[in-house]
Length: 88
View 1 (cartoon, rainbow, N blue to C red):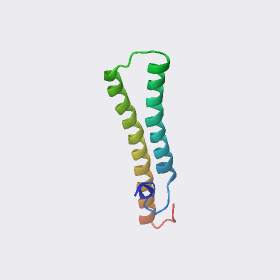
View 2: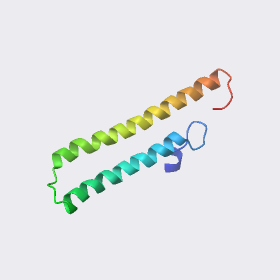
View 3: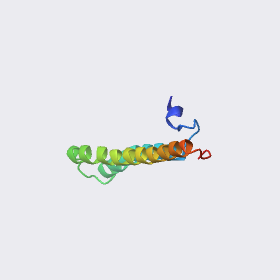
View 4: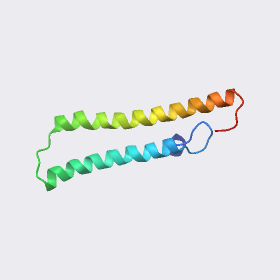
């Protein structure tokens, strides 16, 4: 099932989807690691309100950018096929 999420309308893996998935996973892990490092190593106070406001916003930007890039590419492929162009 996860593998199908990374495939485009051509049935092959798409670079936008693969790089986007890796980038979003990296954001999820690293954002929490940096918060944990700041709290446990540096002794900073953990502010749950700031965390809950910042983390979903950053994740939304990452996912929205991925979705936009994939949508633009899929639209371009569809238009090219309708005009009789070669596979993109």
